[in-house]
Amino acid sequence: MQSLSPRARALGAAVLCLVIAVAAGLAVDSRLDRHWILRGLTAFLAICCAALLLTDQSRRLRQIITAIGLAMFGLIIPWSQTTWSKPPEIKFALQVATDAKSAAEKASSSSVTVANVKTAAEAHGGAVGSFPTEKTPQVHGADAFPVIVRAKRDQGRPWACVSFTGLDAKVRPC
Image 1 (cartoon, rainbow, N blue to C red):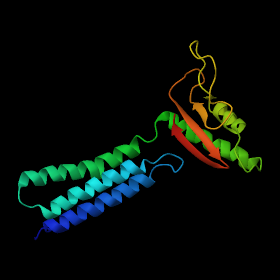
Image 2 (image 1 turned 90 degrees about the vertical axis):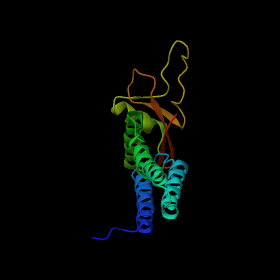
Image 3 (image 1 turned 180 degrees about the horizontal axis):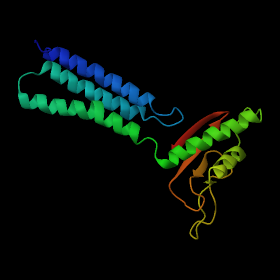
């Protein structure tokens, strides 16, 4: 049985890294910031490692280091970015955004209001606006977009910011 040439393995690794990078980027909800710059940089570094495997066959240690770089930039970093893209407060904010959009559509409105977001957050047991404390008794982010959404009514951080342009939501950490 004949094994693949080093060039075929390097080309296969480069294609696999591109497929993984694109799949990991598309696996994240479109309402979230997808970190395209970081994803593009890691895909570029993975392709550079594959190119090094393609061109440099001189030393075994260099091949091993390049293969480790390929695994890091082509698999581990894209997978971890996708896995960590939705912490609990972001998942809560996405649920609230979905419910607020549904409420606006049910009311035949062309845009989502802060009241829709507040109603949806309270229906899920959360709250809108920053948590008032003795140090900062003023509530921020409760009456205009971007709205601060908290998953627990009696807890301050962590929270997320939700904003709408018409019916299109954007969710981000704030």
